[in-house]
Image 1 (tube, rainbow, N blue to C red):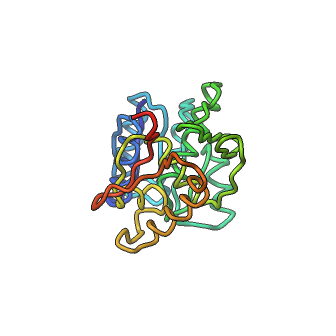
Image 2 (cartoon, rainbow, N blue to C red):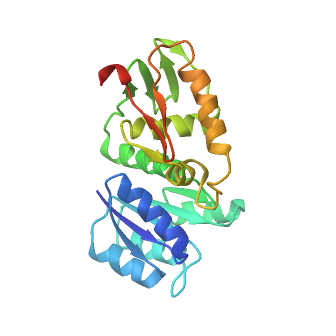
Length: 226
């Protein structure tokens, strides 16, 4: 899948591009509105992530040109503006969704999946590790057929673990995907939430799915399958 990120803040652009690349997107970056519009008009993309406050040409103008040219590529608008009028303007101009900065990559990725699912009409597969099941549509989580109640952050963390089952995830990776690019990964918040998850997911089960990789981070895997 191809993605275009139009964002003039290098930190944000690289954060989004890195996350999308880890999800098997081929990513191009434009740092101003005119360059972004040129790329969007010349190439086909699965998704466009578009900032509103851009040099050369603002995001709404880019969007107007795209829709006037009958370009129907799904567009998620990124904005630091939290005013209702700004959201309405973006959606009325042709945006498919919007996300307010700062944000966690897990939320952006969930919105992208929803848009791509809508356009393709494909059903969403449930995630499974051993007897742990997660339904991304209903956000229902069960283990051994017993439903597990999770907070929003616990759910985001679990979904990230399950989508990358068998892969060792470092604390910086976890912090960016679940908490956002401004999060201090050197705090113990990640470890605290992993412990919360363990109590809900692994407690009472002999097969422990969330495992610590000392000095690196965490991995979710079915140890009984090793």
